Length: 171
Length: 188
Image: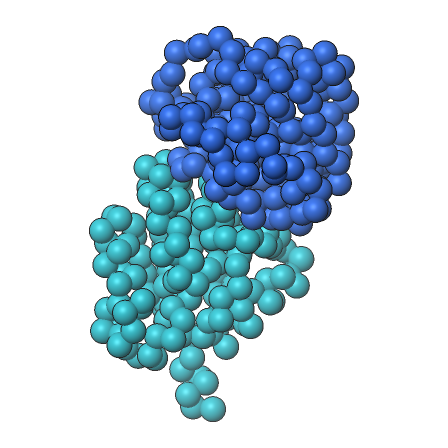
């Protein structure tokens, strides 16, 4: 129980996402976020979830929604982020599209910084984003929810992408 | 087989206020044939045109969106057919300029040239309506109806290079034109 009180709450994340004006969720299921983020979103009448087959599609769908005056969030796993590097390069960064992403760090050890993980796939995520000059934030503890709205607002103000790395499964 | 610019001229003649998302050779020609602030060519990476179009169609269900995709491009993002069919935007017309080659990249044949059925793929993915045209007169007779039909509609256009138009890749991805598109669409 004590541990659960210190866990990131999915409901708080959804509230923050909505507060930032997001109404479209573009998503591929990710083990870190499927149960408590994506499934409630699929059932939420205030959100339209667009299910995709591959993550790079999502980068472009979010950009099309931006062109149409809508705000969107792309939900995926870090493996999908790594698979979408060319779309992030061409569509999000060079195309100056405010693609907002929540990315589950599958199997990251709780409380361990991503760059200190024993897992190669996790360790490289932040350095890759740094090399691409993509803003990123780690969302792992309950207080980290406060980062969500400013991160999304900044992305739209700068018309540049942002990645929120979900370090542990929210409850 | 239709000359691509002739085929696109037919669409341009019947265009009213549709948004047109175009990629590669079709985009280069379309910007000359049907100039408009509602042309969207800022797709950023190969294969992504139909995904941008889906986003625009979902974001503005009151506007018709036509995407001029390429066969090499579509092969790079085949899952888009399933994604679009599942999202089921009624206002999206997915046109494929099928030339059988990677024309921009040296005109090498696509894999499966002559064997693949793109309308078959679209149909099996769940597009409720698919068409194929290799004849200009038939395309001209059908285009008005297709532009008004409930989507997503898939239109396979069998084309070959026609007249040459100047290429301008800078213009295709220019952020200033993208912003112009956003402003025009916000007012439309």
